[in-house]
Image (tube, rainbow over all chains, first blue to last red; front, side, top):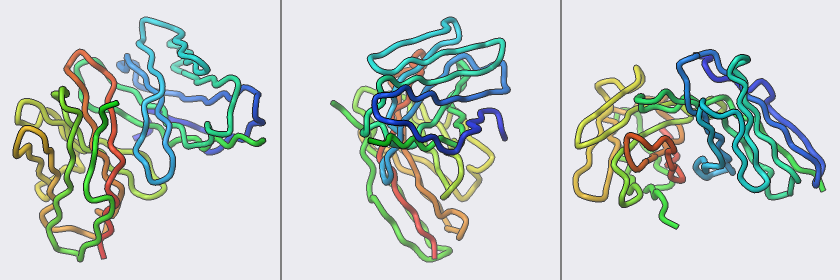
Length: 112
Length: 114
């Protein structure tokens, strides 16, 4: 089941620069998308979300962009900080459905 | 800030034994979930629970699995006869209501089946 894909298993970015994490989906019924951050031995922590009626949502250093025609979303973190080093999961859901469908995750490393 | 809690953090069991994983969802939340993540794989949905019944379940959630909300605060996942392949991190999540879309996750229980 590859409905949500994060094709980059890892990403390394210098502190202070922009981190861009990408996610693609195949199911056009998805209408809500979320990004979670996960540290080792902890559960996923909600970061930011976007509804399909929007193409951008911003919260502090985090911005999520949604391109429905391309079935693609991205998470921008600017400026990147060492504490941002974690695994980032993209997830999607359909209104009325209960489950979240997750991507494989991207390990982000912020280098000083 | 309210959070989902899970116990134990790590459970080791012998194959064929029953295990119960416990979760305390956020207090005003009405929808409860279990997910699992096998090492190196995606986080996978197992089951959702609302109003004291299962509202959706995946094909992974077979007859060996059950969920219960035994009181007003706990939400449990029982695996009746564990298999080696049940070894995984199990995450509990909750959300406020049907119109809400954001699920909040607990720290997980690492289940190791020997």
